[in-house]
Length: 138
Image (cartoon, rainbow, N blue to C red):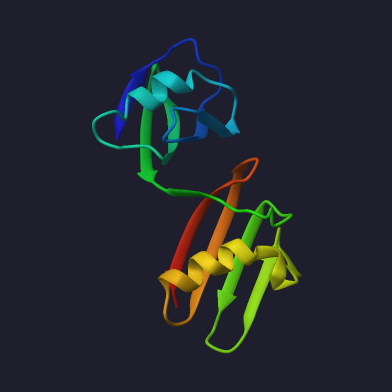
């Protein structure tokens, strides 16, 4: 965990994503000096990463974890996707609603290439066609 001096930042908590190209995407909280918060993790974390910062008096405590970011094309028409394969049935929920698995063809290709057995693949839209991705074996 790192700290950043930023007494002028609004709010008490912020979550954001730092992309490899240097862009910072506010996920939750008020628009803060994300550059200063992301810079406090320099040397300990390489983008892309997801970070959370919490105000502690006049300092911000900042922590983060590495993430995988991928483009999903064609667009799956949802912001939060969960694709599961139990070895027999492929199922997809988009924004919490069961939908046709054909909507997540790109996510299915990625997951099938990485996992030989049952899996769950989650994708969360960051912006446009960029998604935070996790694929886990079941």
